[in-house]
Image (cartoon, rainbow, N blue to C red; front, side, top):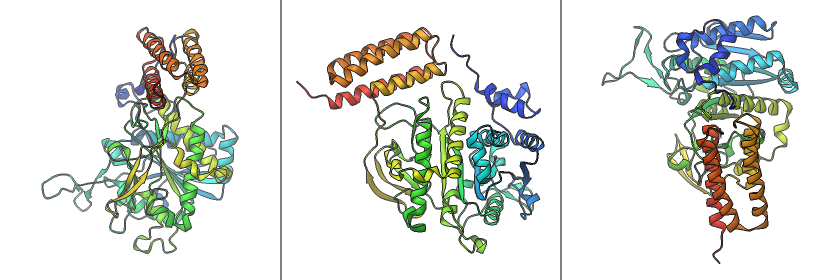
Length: 470
């Protein structure tokens, strides 16, 4: 029978229950989102079980002045690892993007256990400063930014129209910024520890591959656009190259998991703009921001971010957290081992993305640029590899249902390779009918059906463009 679907509420709640005793049946409707108090309890448990490997502290305990959120919450850091290379990994700078917290906590546990050679290598080469919940106020309110407070009265600030004043913490690392006190606290901490690399965990809506309805489960992001107005001019282009190598390494790793679909992060209508945002935290780190002379040597380092789909994957949250885990592990190991340096940086420009029309900036408006779209690869063999993976992870009711599609796709591959496009199109029509039959009879999960239908539609459209009239 179909793998029993774990509800989003229960899937992540399993982890919280295993990690602490604070989860209750009556809060299951939080969809497994880890709250601030839950996070503290998980961190306490992990530290107690770490045999001294993990050090958990607040920025106030570290010695940073006024080191609290706008609403007065402590700001937590978890330090782990024995290596010389310092790395900063953060989640939930946007309070309504919770997967980063889950990913950070689970990654810490895996590092504590050194559950395989790659985690052991990361522990050996790196000291990682994990920030599970950069924006605790926003997390507790399930809002992107955070509400600003008058710290003399203890009341929220309001504008001239009486509306609550808020700030996006990921746009607050600027010379004229640091409006929120958690921004300044984390900035001061950053200038003190001087990390060498940074990873930021986000999630988004559901973009699709260009010219298709194929949903994207992960977008790889660099906040100063490679080849754009800013990044090539930093450190002689060193960060431009290295960030593309890191993202290429992550892309290659994710490509092994056919249930995941990966593109480059874009914004704007149709995803035609790349971001080149100076005020983002990751960008300020790459730029070596020296606010109020707190970073006089202009310490800087490369930084990247991940944007997981903000919705469920085939009805579940858990696969998207697993996707984050796979990517985070790959990036940490690739940087720790130096394997990222062997990646061709131009792989970045081969990752699917819509046509580029410009750079969305916070310093020069929209800067025009032109680059063609990079379409997702599609073929009968590619679709069959997705079916093979779906069969492996339990997306079909039985082996026979998966085998029906596999046999059909084997025939389709033969026709494609023979160049008989008219028969390929007819065979694709049969594939559509088979998928519809399996879905209507509950033989395949909803998400798998929808994705395979999108792939076959896309394949058919690409063939139509290639077909030459008789």
